[in-house]
Image (tube, rainbow, N blue to C red; front, side):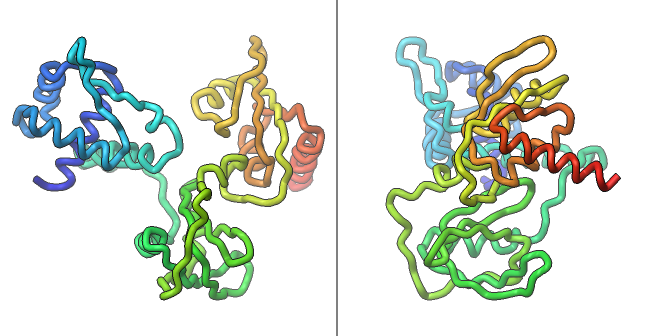
Length: 295
């Protein structure tokens, strides 16, 4: 069976159980037939069990059976509700499957372009997996190009750009893949600290800029339709809703308000007002004044 076809079957099983919560094998089999998942071929229990094992290995999704109702369900749905690789893979493969079935509509499905740099992903992932240092050719905007040997720790996708989090031997640094001119693995190896977590490293930040900005309790007031956008797509994992009225909603964040976070707030224009801390409120005012001066 072609890989693309079997991936499609994995994705169908996951999304069907996420939608309907609990289904017996017969219910799954009927929906499988109705959706023509395998070109009319019925779902066999042996194939279903193999798919369950593969889904666990690939996505970390556990499909269990309730012995009382004989209904199958996803016992750890939270694994698909965060910024994990598994969630991203599921989303990407789901979209790929839909688009593959919609080639005739290619002129009516508009996607966003991704800057250069994806050609280095395979080398960087191999280096991360094998614990090998890499030699980067790099050129920052408005600066001369240079070479740097680093230990690749993690990759992060942010605003259509891939970034490498690396250890330089003295400190952590983030490199954008679209500014890389070359990437090669070296013979030198590295050991990642056993307590290192990329998710934890970025947890107090928005985006990829990680500096010494102090952790703060940020409270913003959202107007108009902005509260709905923030509820459906939170700015940060720490987001919580404090107060909701007919005119506005207040949200709070425990975050380091770096330039990336300030830029995200600015994109909401008059729909957002920073209430606290005062330093951030002053920063927003300065940015707005600079914008006004340009007009």
